[in-house]
Amino acid sequence: MSDLSNSEKTYACLIAVHAVKIWDVLLDKILQDIREQVPGNVIWLGVNVPDDILRRAEQMQINLVSVSASYGNLSQILNALSTELEDHPVDGLFNVMGGERACGWVLQRLARKLKVPFVLRVSGNDFAVRRLRRDANTDNWKSRLFWWYNRQRMLSAADGIWVMSDAEAERIKFTLPFKSNIFVGPRGIHIPEQSWAPTGNARPRVITIGRMSAEKSPDLIFKLARQHPGWDFVWIGDHQISHPLPDYKNFRWTKYLDGAAIESELRQSDVFLLPSKSDAMPQALLEALAVGVPSIVSRQIEMPKIEKYRPFIQVSYSADRYSEVLQNLLGDKDKQLALSHAAKRYVDEVMSQERLASSVRKRLHDIYQY
Image (cartoon, rainbow, N blue to C red):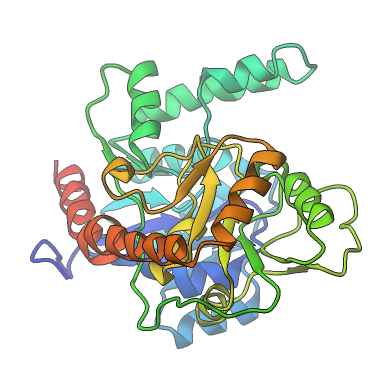
């Protein structure tokens, strides 16, 4: 922990104001990583947290507090959180996810009631003007416009804005040119003790990790599985698509696993594949790079200093192009080893948790002490 840490300072972090499906991932990874970036003690706030999760958090010495409220009733959630924090005085607030919508709405008003500064942590979503354009010809455009307006108010009111990538920072600076307290602070990743090595699999194994939603292009993965019955495809993450999963012998889907299990799955795979339509930096990609799995991702994904290190292959969004690049990579062991080496070097020198945490702690310290 940095010298900036001060045991007398306590900050509250609002995890979410909706039902959370990935509590295990939050406890095992996200909260632990973010904790290293905060200059003080943290109280984690959740809504309707299951009892077994509260027990696990206590065993892990995570100060997780739950309030009871209806998920859709933001005013009720706000009042419940405000009452809870009367017994837990805090020096500042921030959030884990959902900062641009309902969670940000609650966070802003909670900070106002408690008279403390708040940092809006925005993670993984492009909520810029182009989202409005995409929905401009649908019945939903009024709702989008309403949330865009509220988002601008939240961003303007925040004492600091914590984003995950330079691209997100630039988008906010474009819409809020007067805002100065915008800083980039990805979670980073811990480098595991065991790294990837060529697997020797008789059937090439391709792995994808992340929420199975339209943004992650599952249909493209399904098409690849149809085209290449001799390859095995594994997807780890929540299933959030409306149609049933295809019944392919060479496709396997499983829910989120714990950190050690995911590392094991990555080491057993020949390639990590992520045809995401978003330009946000996925944490799953960092996990794959930390293990050293040769990775192929969408061209629009933005991460710092990738031009210098080239830790993965970037591909235009096309099933045929992904298929071509996959075939070439799986047939070239030297290329696989070179990518693995570049990935581990990139994580070690640019994206390791140890390197990033001290920078974020300093920025948060300066904002909260302002």
